[in-house]
Image (cartoon, rainbow, N blue to C red; front, side, top):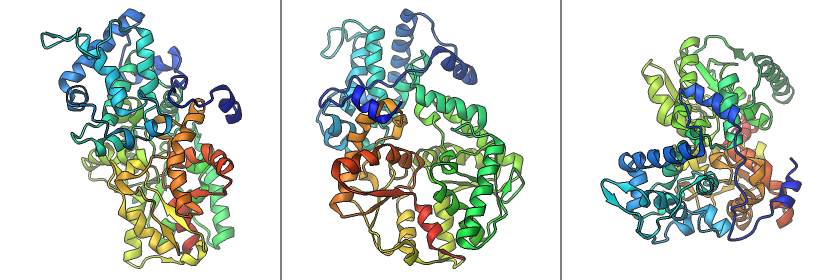
Length: 471
């Protein structure tokens, strides 16, 4: 579907974004995914509603964040000016407190610990499939960016609540088609784009030839061979972000690191983070299995925010059980700079004013904020920080699975927040070292440039490293 058609058929209306419901995955796709995690979903609508209520009550009793969102939130409103989805849309339900109220209404309509909340303020008389569609709509429009958790005086992490509610909705068969398809592709092929082993090898051959033409060196890239390290790019790097991929390969060559790529794991991303914990864990285990199979001692994560969050908090501890470490590519670049193993010429990136914008999953879940800035100091002549940086960065607008075409008119409004900060600082080029950020920017920057009559450009950070490397 063309984005122009999407804008025409689903126009953005301030204060009410209920028409931007993510298209749902069909029953066959959901069933196939359920089989992967050993789940059997309830069948009838009545069973689904009953199951949703039961699971939500279980989470309320056992999940601290869900309980806090329901019991502790006092509607102070401090999360509202922090939430990009609310600021951009003006829809009260498209906010942390609004989303929490949707599940609070369900919980207050049930018996909890022997106490009846049915007459409490905020309770609803009827919880049915129509009501669950409303829950689905607004919980899938959440970016899971965690900005609200930093603004809340009680520390309520609505992003974690969103993941929990989405997981329950998925268990009854209500899942975003885009995210479900992405997870399904990863299970099938080892990457989000269903790249075949032949395609991976052909693209690497092409990239190696381009590097030879541009840098004068001929790289020999191991694929599916034993090595010291395993590189995990994003599958988007094989198509959309080839300059980023070139940056990985040329840097590892220059730094003298013995590495391999795997056609079974041509992906660093893990969309299980947005769908269900068991899918996150299952896909992460694929990385562990392949790393052990290839006998590597180190796994290198490429540029992707949510991938890094999943790796840091799940994949890394699992790899360490087998004596394998995991680092981000930026960590290795810094080490090489400090040890004098690589030479960089910032002149190669011109007199452009770059702006570094933190991907939200690096800054609010990945502890990766100063490393990119250190690298920028060595590869760019001039770069600036936005007003809202580090833990207060604005999400690109596509996180949480919101890259799907049907919500482009809405997420383009989300994106105005970071875009206007770039314009305010007279930046000409935005650096966002995250595959979701770059995919989101490819969706919305053409429209934003048209609306503002500007020519803002964007890329990852390893793109600049590639240009600045002196071989």
